[in-house]
Length: 515
Image (cartoon, rainbow, N blue to C red; front, side, top):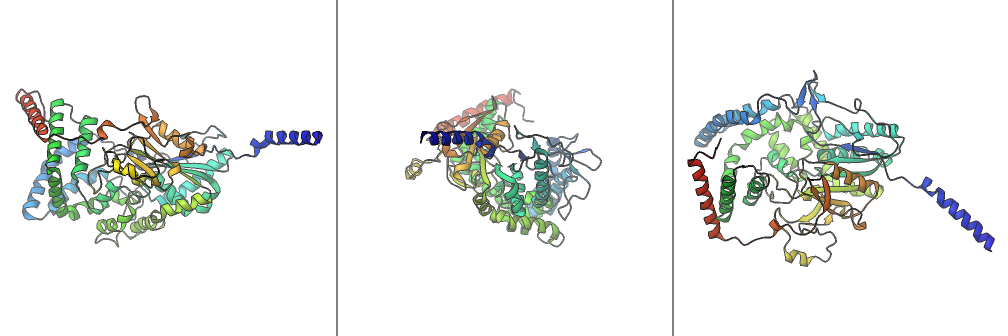
């Protein structure tokens, strides 16, 4: 009996030694797909097209055009005819983007192209120790995500051939996530065979509210959102260098907010915009960003048809092929994006979602007081979830109503329980939409390669970016500025006039330059 047990033990140990050879290696080469405006574009002759290189500074263009535009605007207000104003604005703005815009079919017709593409950029011949920058997918970010998906499919095969791997991971940031979504729908069978994990960073798959407001003409100026935006840039970004002037403007904003004047001012501006938006917005968009199918893929699904009808009103026949491209993504990909993700997850492709937060959004749409990364709301980045408004925390009543606080953030701003994938959704605090430093890219690779889930504790769901040191730390506790405070109205008025006196003294003494 002992001999039999010994033989069995030797066999088990021997088998255990060779098990790693049969186990699937979770480390795969990761294809990194950047978003819109992240790849240099060049003209047909090789000169740089984007980023725009010009001897004239943007501020100089604005200063030169400000007076003529204002004159035409005032004339429009007096005559209730804003066509001259719209044309003046068009003449200033559109020429800046002449060389970048696509034709009426949403195609590149002038020979301009990305500086690199999948054929000209070196593909490392690696077999292990892959990092996030080994396999960057370079493409023309102006074209339809459905067309970019064709190139992505080819690039995946090229990377597999170069590495000898059977599968890759794909990582898409912002519009790069839209390209992945298009690929997953258009080439599902190929994806199931070649893709192990998908990670989305600050995804725009289900749209950007700020961009949608422009594409639909539905500009909404909410007082709280305006206050959030202006206060952030004056207090945190030090937009106004002079301390007394900054204090005066911040205090003035607080006072206007208290007496509800910000909402009134916003409403007046909305009314004015509504009178000229049809003359101004569609022609400008059709000859700039609205000529690019990529930007149409970032219109929110619930507002896409409204945006399409607004921008292409009266000229749908001319833009028929362009509309065909934007319809393709909207109806076949975006409308069913979440269902497709759940379906693919069941079939073996894991999704890892990373959202960023703690910045105010542009205050031009209803709901802009939401929590987000300064460009995209958290609820869209994370495919669901519940969030306190920017600068606030959940009420105690809301917290007490929760039966399960597993997915509640330590700073009481986020409850990820209703996200599409709460166990594989992470949030990074204090990282702006435009910023994708090493730590967040590394986090995406690590959670994919280690098949991590939030509940296993290896990678906490809520992390904070520290620019000084370029690192992520744990989110701990509530922000002091997020706890509501009772404002003393009379003290606010006193502070306003005190700061006004200081500003006037500086002006009188010639110590404050306004230009």
